[in-house]
Length: 413
Image 1 (spheres, helix red, strand yellow):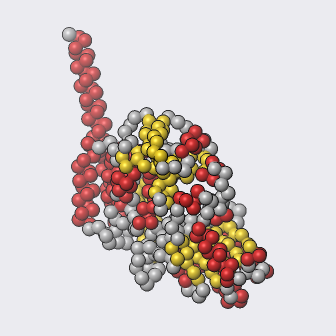
Image 2 (cartoon, helix red, strand yellow):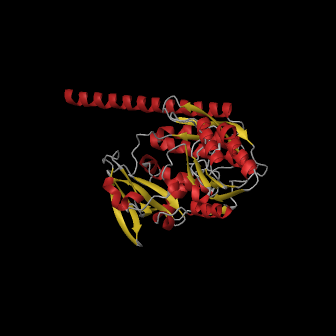
Image 3 (cartoon, helix red, strand yellow):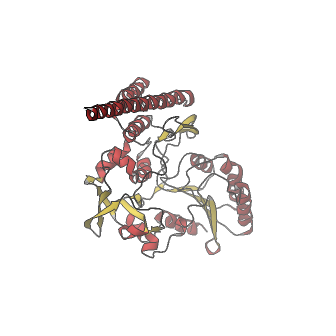
């Protein structure tokens, strides 16, 4: 009898604890959702330019009602879906922390599909493979599901952001693509033959990364060698041209944009340079004032004094403040634009404010201004000459956009 009584007490206590836990869990998430809603309304100049306020608030209310039946991963996914409907690439919620388990690969979306371009050493034999499915779910279905979570402005935004989300297993779990098992099965294709690989969740992925160029000993194109640098240049004296890659609108501890612009100015004055190739394909934004204040006057002065042409390279990673660079340069005559369309609209919301949700600690970014930069309101900036990025070129160590601009610039010298 005493034993039964003890068991009863344990079950009763456990039930009370579970009820209290889930009740508290629901209340805390409700506070997070209310915090998000309040700051969105307070900060964003026009959050309902695409999606109605009534529908938005109904979705938030419906989510609050479902909280007790959802786990943390599922709640985060539902919140991402709601925020993505706003349709502003700068207004987003980053719901999975950096320590989330990720696949040991870096994917890139080429014209031929999604390919593995980087891997950890353990899985490096899969570099160069095309992704076909994850846990039996075709990649086309996965892309559709992931697209609902990302505040996209055009199809190049999909190509830019999908590879980043694709590797976060917490997201794949919440979307029911993967389960909480200890391993994940991927179907891949190499040399037109399909095979399967199994990834363990317990592996340490902090090991050295191997690129497709390392694995197959392919010479890395010049334009891909220093993408991690904010800015750098290369002068080609025989061809009378200067290549300037501007990857982030931000000073570095080693050199400010102002000092770097002075360095560029000295080279342009000293050398016989007929053409400038400005590459902003990897420019994710920053302070737009840095280009207009320091780099634009240098380029304008050179064009006025020595003539010549400017070739501007854009791509899917050309984002945010880099739209001002395009605008500023198009004011100069003799500018040829080459590459891919940009991932966000030329006229866009921006100047983000950051918030942290009090319970989940997730980061929420929200636009605070609208920038009407161009007279035509298009979904992307479309260069005059569009050059797709293909796997066959990438695997051959070819950057067709750079090569095309280089040949054009040489003819101008």
